[in-house]
Image (cartoon, rainbow, N blue to C red; front, side):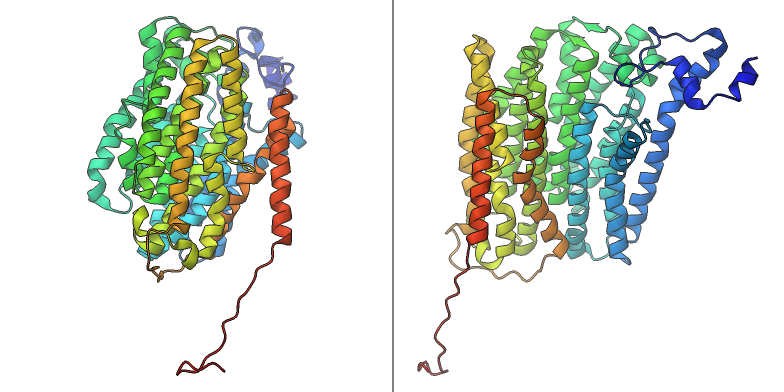
Length: 558
């Protein structure tokens, strides 16, 4: 009878018999919906195979597209770019197609969605920009381009992983490939930098990752811990009241964010790796730790006091230290590396305050998106500065706006965002962070005062080092401009221009979904007013060309 029925049931119908759809079209836990004996075999297949099979097919297709695009980058440039762009947006095409067809081809939750959007945008920008950068330095670039694109693709795949086994395999793969990226340009000269990255960052991160797996496995078993979907794991109650275990789960992810005292790897890695690679580290790889902490919070009941004190203390110390160090740097790349540490500290403190109000999660999302796009563009811009001037010393520059006006135009909005000025996403993010800190402080939460002090100090120092960065273009440090002999590729300009525009466009989608009070809407209202003013200034701006009086060779005017 069972064999006869199987021929008339689709695979989807068999799955429905195993996991009926909930109110949000998600499959509920096996503990809540058990199969009858006749369909037990199909239920096991559905649990392990059905959801992953489409995801694995998609991953294979992405690898084929990226590999093909990278391998023809020297011979068929346009085809290469098209293939790589398709690879980075294909996940969203599949998701949208599934939504329109009222089915789930691959499933992602809201947490994955934000990081996937960031990864797609930053991935396209870094991939296309690095093509021109590598071509200037090496000429033939297909193998180098393949390493970069595979790293970006692995990060994107990590944010689509649906169980701990997939997450762990991709996490470790990214760490190993990242070591190769550090050696990409200078080879063995960066060996000590790469070794420091492996010992401090990778080892610590893996300690937290495997602690997470061990805690989950002791509660539900190793097989279920590794293979069960995150959505189903959320229905399990996994309590971690032990302070030591809570600390172990967190400390490695904080080390990957360069939190003191685990910061010794970050500045050296960011400053010595090629700038497009640093854009990957700061713009995307750092977000892996934020994602991991948010995922842990959704699956484990941690010791709240240990969680709060650990994140708030390390985040505050890191924010203050990195803000001061960033303002004291003369190397523009080290300055932005310390700036990244500052932002990591702020995000760490924000994560700590989630124990008081889960609505802060939305602000974490906004800040993650802000920092990811910001640092992706800034480090790509530093790559352009290095190509044009062959120096990163701020006091040897100061003239780039004269000799590379297009580059200056592309970075202006991003510098405003780094300062936190309107009409950029940096203004929205910093204003809302300060506002949330004031709300929590007004409620008598003492930890909120620590957060407020850290945010204000970081905002003040961000203006200082942002002005120094602006001085690279319009400062008066150099009296004799150096005329660059290298011309940037048009694709590099396009990517920088796109990221710069996103600094003022990205707040608009958040405006549509935000649910705040009067102050929140006032902040967005000020943003809208300033963006209208900027657009009006652009429309009515006229270039004034002053013509010199032609002279004879002898100096006599005509």
